[in-house]
Length: 324
Ligand code: SF4
Ligand code: SF4
Ligand code: SF4
Image (tube, rainbow, N blue to C red):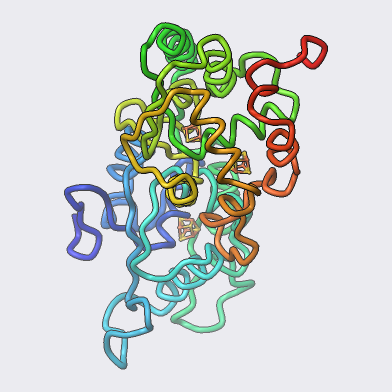
């Protein structure tokens, strides 16, 4: 590893424009920094672990320092680094996981190399264009994709195993804001198991056995095992909503006056939720979000939670057959 792009015990450091170079590499190109920046090793590390953390480092720190004159890198690649960071709405020193960067942030914000590696001609000796700039390797790499998701067979098996557990356990484990997600989904028409999560099964178990204990936990819970955003090796959620979901959990706990590890019978818990939480916006809304990590969920203002709350806990747990 070069001194500026070393491996950290828990992740990688990379120059921002090397994120793009990995797409060129994936698209069949041979980036100029391939060896010096160990791009093949980095690509493998990312393909092996979509949750590996990557810190983006440039010649500058997050405030444009640390010195008056930059003493690292040539101007063309210094510029590329900052162009990429600006397009990604990030600053030097920012850290994200590989999934966020390669599956969402770069593809959503940088569709081509125009203005980054494609300069429309070379304006001086310091401003040479990369030989790959117009080859289409970057776009091909975007099409190929870099992130490797969960094996579908393993995901299907997780669904079966986790549903068995939900139906047989004496104590369900649910992260608090998922209680609200269950109601958003049910209010939106969920009447059967979903492939991607176990929201339905938690509701069904609560109906079948209203005295079943529900332990509230912060973080991925019994809803999560079949989800594409669940990393079973690390037992974490990497769906991109991870940090705002942490806040939603804490918001819900605060409203309920509870905390991680508290246990209530299902009926009592649903009743407490309806009593203490008047509107979903108190948990999920954030109209001032400027970066995707803090974006507001599309169901926040749907009114579904509020309608179910008005109907009450008895109707939720004992619905009219014609409503089902
Ligand atoms: S064109 Fe740009 S992104 Fe692609 S290898 Fe060259 S410097 Fe990297
Ligand atoms: S608004 Fe979205 S995050 Fe919030 S409870 Fe509903 S589905 Fe869940
Ligand atoms: S893994 Fe994440 S996105 Fe998926 S159900 Fe769990 S909390 Fe939600």
